[in-house]
Image (tube, one colour):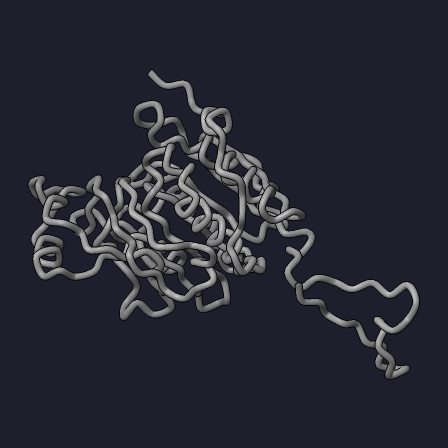
Length: 300
């Protein structure tokens, strides 16, 4: 473990040489860091789109892996009390998107939060909004988004065989997992500020559906046929110093039991909050069956 030595400049003496000197660990998470989770309404079948259960599980694991970090979780829509954002270092949004995205009606009031450089993480459907004004804001805040009639949302086994050298991939090894991995995302021009984190080759089977807002279009069909790598998760460094992370997985609640899948997202949340990520990643115990079942929505 590395230690920072505190020096007393006036005396020119090292404090660590004095009786009663205390050292501070550089690997310890800063005290007072706060992460806010916003979970959307109940959606899909039981075990899918478990926004509240997934958010509460990630919050619990974040505190487990980074003692000293404070989390708050609110669910079923945009917070009615905006004071929850006070002192937030990062905001995690896990909800249904498109026309019903919980940010769509709150663009103006959310803008000052982004202007402060607060971190932003959008999980699964939360990376999708509508093209135009809302989509432009997502490009500004997140660096990329799911654009209808451009991006697609098939279920497939994504093979992440190579990982970039980035803080978010700390402790992660190549893995394969089935999820509703979105791809052919709309990114900022020239990918300025964007670092792909999870990239895979989409198989031809992902193009088995007809054209539609989410299922296919000539542009994505050409990209898959040409074997173009598809980015399903990315880090974004905003011009004002804020950090963002887009993660298209998270349809299946059970995938949070996968240590690579879960740890990568925990690392990303910490990175956006500007918390030092441990060398081996944010280490947490694999969730038990009881933890996985906790807080799941009551669905028809």
